[in-house]
Length: 357
Image (tube, rainbow, N blue to C red; front, side, top):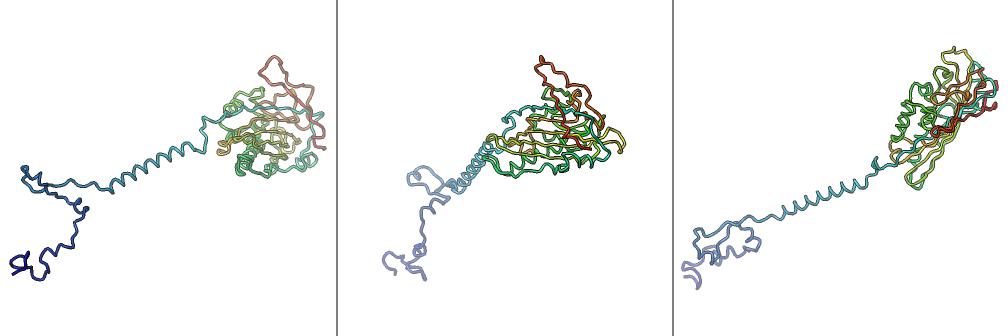
């Protein structure tokens, strides 16, 4: 017989303590109970009429899913915040907020010779016996100066301003298609958008009003009067950059160009004369101009000769060629009552500025 408390037949063979010992190591902790899908009704609930002894528990909410949802919301909020930040911190200014471009102010002064214009069939001889004998040829005569950063502009930005100004000078003073009046587009491509209307109006409706003279934007000769006898234009001058405020760089250019010209359509053996143009230009750049490699030309002062003071130099330069004189014609008439026009100016081309041949 079994011991007190044991079944009459005794404990099961091979298992000390009977069948209960088999489950003594199993611990039904709280998490195990919560995870159970079936739940027995309580004693109070069993008093009521319930056919089944147990009920099915609703599935427990998974904590991992809520963490994923939280992470997704956080990611969306982060992306939205980044978009707002980048919009506020946009490195490029809104074009609508840019300062309006200042109109170009220009002056074109003809220089009349004191006698007959000297000339010879050999352009090299003319250059060798003129003040331009030691000038460099073409763009080599427009070297970039050493550049340094300013308080609000980096060294690379200063270099960009200088190189863009040089590019404008080269295109507007040295390109053969521009000098002969065939093209203006190479120059126009460098003009800031705020000045394009003024530029276009200057060529569609030229006027000697200090605002709309094509010869204030570029150098071009009357193709019916003169042509290039030598494409090697002699050049000498300087470039300087300076910061005017936290948002603006300005470049000042002062260059003298010497061209060899002959009469339009003449034989290559026809006498050649020299024509001199001094251009003093002031360029302005904001950060958008630097990024786009465009410029605002705000001041243009041109002295050119030999020209006749009686000729209109607004649309084209009409050079006096070898053997010609300025004649008795005076400068173009000025109406002091017309406040919208510019005062006509004319100078005298010194003999020392002409080749001694």
